[in-house]
Length: 92
Image (cartoon, rainbow, N blue to C red; front, side):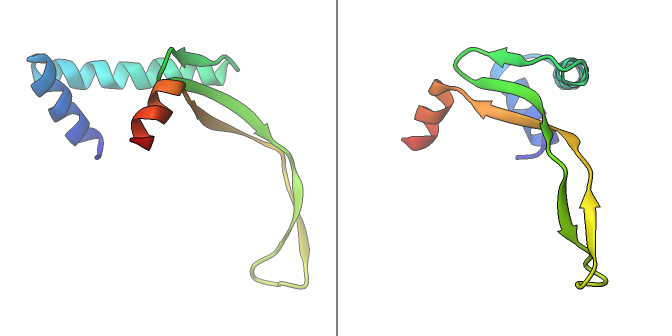
């Protein structure tokens, strides 16, 4: 399912206009991104938690010159930790 299909499905379930649902989905994404940029977690009880974690730097191999090693820097990445209800729904 892509973003357009999600908007269509939500509009059908809620009887809201597709434009309103599209605005809501975009604002939802914006709020989550803003909180993750601040280093905050966003928890939706039963569904899951969005958080930002630091992935430690490490040594890697240069794909163009396999004999050469490169240093991969530490980077902050988004992560999603599913909640209990979501895990149970997927298992069934």
